[in-house]
Image (tube, rainbow, N blue to C red; front, side, top):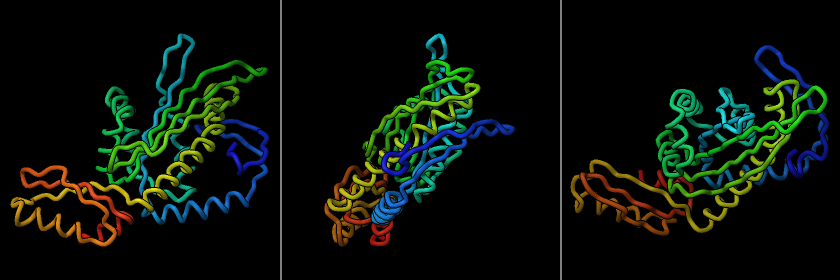
Length: 275
């Protein structure tokens, strides 16, 4: 249940159609809250340059022996994708990490816990934010003939330019189902809206603060073979741009110049100023 949006809800039914699982809900929704928050979100996204997001998600099940078993088809993926798309976010490289998760689980697990690696890969595919998530499913009992499970969801948003954590949120959902897959989907859908709402709120607050103070961007100039003739004039041009707060040279060598700049504007506005 999403705080402030859904005032009350009731499960009307659940079932399976071929490979799809569904839960039918009756919900009383506060349209005023949704409309107000959407207006704020759209404004904040516009100010941030409509940042692109890459999802990196994993879902595991705690079996009877206490061992974590990877879920082949995570229910968290489609749920969070839908929530982000409805809020106007653009998702990048949706299939890349899913393929890695299936084929190279050790490499995927290493990346999942490394914010610098997440930022590196997110930047590679053109995303400004990497949203990293884990979902741990655990059976907690039975309600008649149905299984009861909990879903512990942890999400964090990583800035692709700086590898800094913009927000980190955790919550627990509960669900029931005739079998584990249905119960898992039910629990995930119970927890996901609240955790995503809180994550987006924190991200928006970060963007608003950055908009006031200036956002950090990392700029790399290649084929800058001569420092005095190419690299230094480029740095001088960067410092002369309107809304530039700071230009810091991180490294130079092999014809490659790397800068960190603080800019009061969006990525697209910065690129327009450079080119």
